[in-house]
Image (cartoon, rainbow, N blue to C red; front, side, top):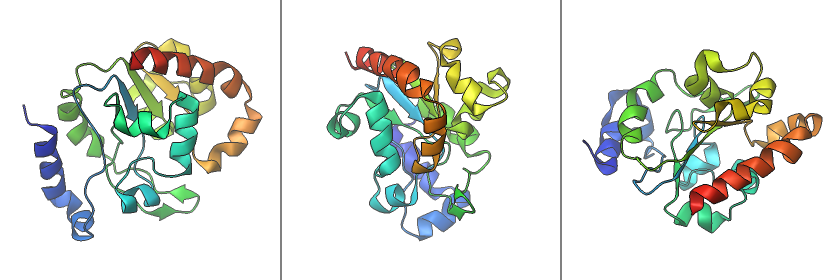
Length: 193
């Protein structure tokens, strides 16, 4: 079985990633055998990619707040792994970042998942991660899927993306903060033990 370092080299050298490698970008993910929490998201944002630190932006601050963890716990605990659907910033679209490339996760996720045998809690962050991992099991809308998060436990915990672009969604759906976030925080704390 290849190591995380070997897979990182293989991803960097993949011809499909040549444009990113030419920019000097490394694939942005964090997997480790001790991880008990896995965050599957869409792709790094611009700030995350340029600082080479996943969730190093307002979205990351909001996600850590929902999880009930500090920045230090998130980055330095050896408990949290991050594996986006695409390991490179896809560029800017009309209303936010472009979606992750199709087929990228299918190519690289399985060998990386094999390196994390201790994961107890997998967060699916945003519609792309939810679609990729829940497929036809998800509800017709993101809102309904997140509202019925308990139907996907213990395998997955679906969440809306923590982007500032979704603050309006959070205001329209106050149950998320009152019902979903406390349950998420309890499960994160259990996985940190």
